Length: 393
Ligand SMILES: *Cc1c(COP(=O)(O)O)cnc(C)c1O
Image (cartoon, rainbow, N blue to C red):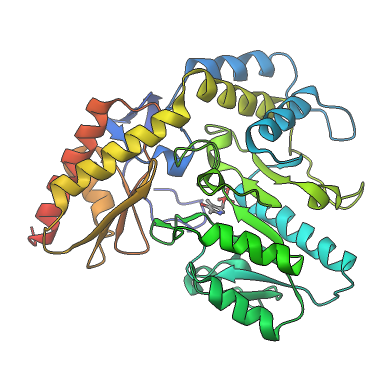
């Protein structure tokens, strides 16, 4: 038992010691199929040879210096992300929460430019932005906030998917400077934004001079069948946060900005000791190169459709199944009751890694490299679990 670890997680009684592609092995040698990828992290699967080689070569060359000096791999990764996203500049950090912290700080600097000294950012109900004090305050989930009051203020909440609600807030609130929103609410139950929502927010932000800030920590890096989920909508945000899939498992986050928002930070405003070191940036650059070389963004779209079609075929009309939905390889099966126990049952009964989010939605986040045959195995396993669970077995 982990007697000397703080009690922050409800852990399953399984410890993995090895991975290869979409497979994991536990301490007893049992093999599992991974449909979670460490929560949208290992998009290229486990022990990918190009990633292992990048880590080994860079570790034996130079892991870390300091942002006091030039870092060639950080510049190369910034260039690559700008080229793929159409954004202008990047700041590198170590996690999704930190990427959102940078975004929130940009919004505050934007407020100073506008002469607003008590700025507010519109955030959504049911959202998730991280566990630091500012990002948990932005998060729309009381469970994440409880016990940590006083919250950071300067966040105003609106229902997700409702542009008119944001417009209504703007009518009586003069101090708004930004909107922070996920293109698909991942932790909130795999809820894609309604058609036209992001474009309408873009227009509203332009009308008022607000920053449109997208949290793409979960949806970015090919996950939804586009490099970045906003590319489904034909818009460009002012600010975008990334993390999870960018490093395939090495800790890296990035805050990207475009236009005037990209010019807000000046030397001394923000920083990170580890952020953007040569090791993680080389790995991030390699992740993007492999995704590009192997056509994995398109693959995520095709395979995601296979998942949604296949799960609908297996589960639609089953009493207790509310909806199958998804965007690329971010797939949800919503049931009519809490089903958290399915995480453990998937492990023990099906040797399968899945997740349950927002209490009653099964969430699948498979690797972009998963084969059709493995996808079908995942769906067969999930289908058996759901049928048995809903039948009360
Ligand atoms: C996971 C996640 C975060 C937090 O990322 P950490 O790396 O755990 O800090 C923030 N926003 C979204 C949308 C996420 O899915």
